[in-house]
Length: 134
Image (cartoon, rainbow, N blue to C red; front, side, top):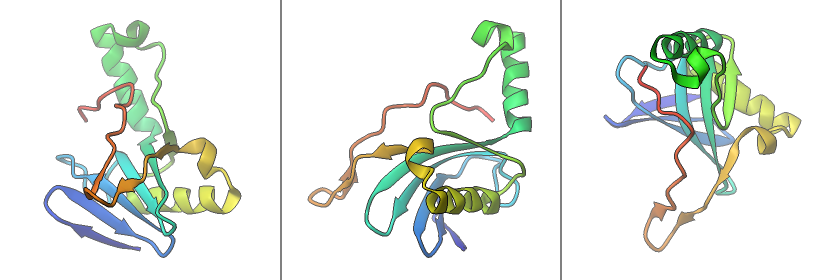
């Protein structure tokens, strides 16, 4: 696994896929407790995942209890969620590897439209149910 950074995105390269993660302030590769990722496989197929630790979910639910969101923090939801036990991109990549090898990737991560080769752009993804402020 190699990680590169272009100032806006981290690119995590694995032999089977590339994972692109927006660089959120305060979320470094070894310490990120949540991340949104676009995962592109060698065959060109693309999937989307949101990774979060249990602590990150707890923090959001606690905030929601204070703000009144989600029935005062009594529930949490997020599409394409993969809960990881520890922080960092390494655990996120390991989860994707396992989901691919077990066949669970199709149920765990939403399929994205392919990249349009004519324009070099992808079709925009519908936004997830929530935005994360960190």
